[in-house]
Length: 382
Image (cartoon, rainbow, N blue to C red; front, side, top):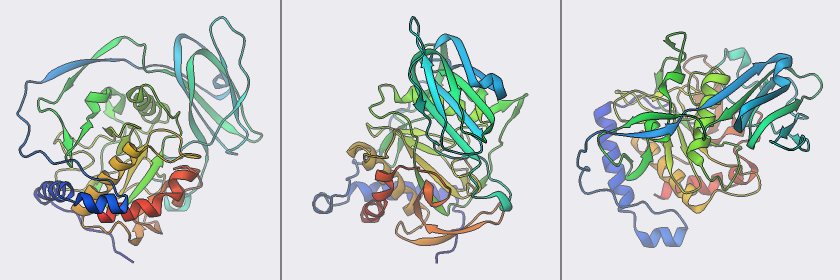
C-alpha cells in the first residue's frame, strides 16, 4: 500500500501545475477518442494580461434558523430557496411539507439523509454517522413543517434565500480569467462567498490547517439536477455548512456544476492557489467527518443516484483529479492506507474514492459511485 505523500513546496507545486497543464493539453486527441477519456483544453500560451480589480453585485443570503421544537416549523417573510435540516438519530423516516403563498400546505415529502460531513472527530467517533443533514429545495415557499423519525433528537432547521436578498458588493481578482490547469474556475468572490460567514464572535470559526495530500474523495451535493442557478446553490451550501452546521466554511475543496464550471470551495489563503497553502499542503475541509485532514473533497452539484454526471461535469472532474494527482505525485489507481494526522485514524481506501467508502452515506449517489473505476482509468490516461 502507498504511504502518505510528503508536502511539496509552493515553487514545486506551481511548477508542477504548469507542467501538468501543458501535458494535459498535449494529450493526443486520438487516444482520448479511442478511450473515451476527456480531453483537456489548450493551456494558455502566456498568463492573461493583468486588469484592474472589478466589483460585482451578488444577492446577500437571508436565513432564519431554529433548533429543537421551534425548528419543526417556520414561516418567513422572504421566499425560501432551500431548507437546511439536520438531526441526530435514525437517518431514515423524516419528512417535510412546504407552504406556498396563497395555497395550503403541500404534500409530505420524504427527507433523504444527505451528504454526511463535519469536522474531524476523535478516533473513537470517526466513521460514525450521527444522523441526517440535508438541503431541501423549496421553490420559493414561505414556510415548512417537519416530521422526524422516532428516536430523532437535536433537530435544527434553516430557511435560506440566496437569490432575492439585498445586493452585496464583491471584489474580484484583478487578473482574469482565473484558471486552474488551463480551465477557468470561479473564485470564492466570483460565486458570492461572504467571507464574514467564516467568522464567529469576531474570530475565525475554523482556522485553516494544512496537511500533505493523501487521498481525493468524490461527492454529490444531493441537490436538484438541471439547476438553473448553481452559484445560488453553492451559496446555500456555504451558508448551511459554515453557519447552520457551525463548521466555519463550506465543506468541499471544489464544486463542479452540470456545465462543467469549477467553483473554489474551502478558503485556503490569499495566495491565489486554491485548496493549498504556500508550502503545497492541502487545507482541511469538512466533507468526510473524521477523515478530513489530508483528504481533498470534490463535489458534483446535483443528485447522481439514478443518473451519471453530465459529460461536461465529468470532464472537469477528471481534469481536476488529474491535476492534483500529478502535481502531488500520486497514482490515481492506487489503493492506499489513509492516516489522519489529527486523530491517528487509519483506513484502507482507493486513492480516488467515493464518500460512501468513508462513512455510512449514499453519497456520491449510486450512478456516480459505479462510475468511479472508469473515472480512475480516465484520470490515469490523461
